[in-house]
Amino acid sequence: MKLTQIDRCTDISKLISDIGLSDSISESAVSADVLIVPFGYNDAPNVFPQHIDELFRFCKDNKLKIEILVDDDKYEEIVLNSHVMRLGKIIVKDLALPLFISVLGAYIYEKTCNDLDTDRVVESVSPTKVEFEIEVIDSLQQRKSMTFKFEGEAKELTKATKEIKKIWDGH
Image (cartoon, rainbow, N blue to C red; front, side, top):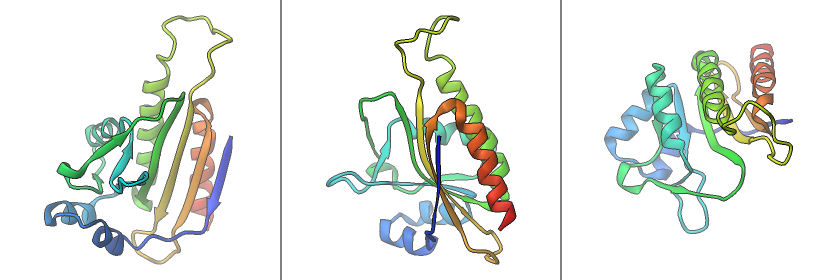
């Protein structure tokens, strides 16, 4: 497992302006607790990892105020062939962090527990890897935001999210 803390602070208003969102998406993004940020790929600036729309719906179903930072007509997914679940960059308000971590864990578990249609472990099948970047921002703007990058096996997610919460709560 690799969990890295990165010194990076995103100006949400500037990000929304730079992406050029419609007024309705911009308003929704400002009030959201969780934002999914496009990571861009080559000449496609509004690209998101494969299945990010499923994570979006899963979060919505679990009562998180979430927004994908792109207008619907510009949304694109990129499919990279590998056994890696890429979730891209996600910005989370600190007050929503515990719920988001719980929902993210449930989502990843749901997606990876069915990797094999058997109860026995097949040694030639590698475990699902997960990659994401979470920036935690202070809702009251009293503390500096913190960004965490996770790369590891899905089964290591619980340990990583506990560490993220511990570091955030301790700063």
